[in-house]
Image 1 (cartoon, rainbow, N blue to C red):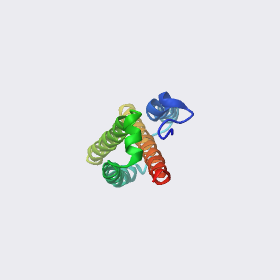
Image 2 (image 1 turned 90 degrees about the vertical axis):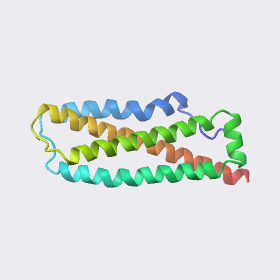
Image 3 (image 1 turned 135 degrees about the horizontal axis):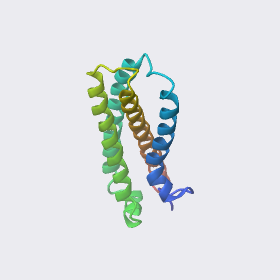
Image 4 (image 1 turned 45 degrees about the horizontal axis):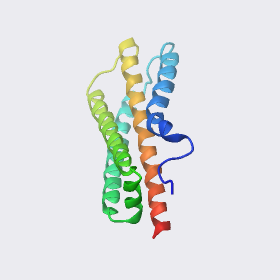
Length: 157
């Protein structure tokens, strides 16, 4: 039974959520912001990210609770024997850390006045967007794996 690993492999599973957003976000940010100013509604994006990532942190905490509640289930025993349980917990931890980082950066940005024409601010906001994308990809990875584990658990019982 192959619950966590998929056809794209462990390398993509581990590094894809980091590399894809950094690559795409950097290229897009450099190409777009070199010719345009920052969005006019940036304040709303910052406030929305605070709301969204507060919810995501709660979801990740609930996910961890679900997994820990399944501690004595056969699927968890299988994951532990295959040495994949620790990796899944690491994925949840990475998701939590990045979601908290996005929240922290968003709180800081919420209290600052952003010069939408400044090159430094364009790089800072591009970095913030990249952190958002990384965090979203990490949350998608955890959610996808959680559903696979829950699905495998129902088929084993």
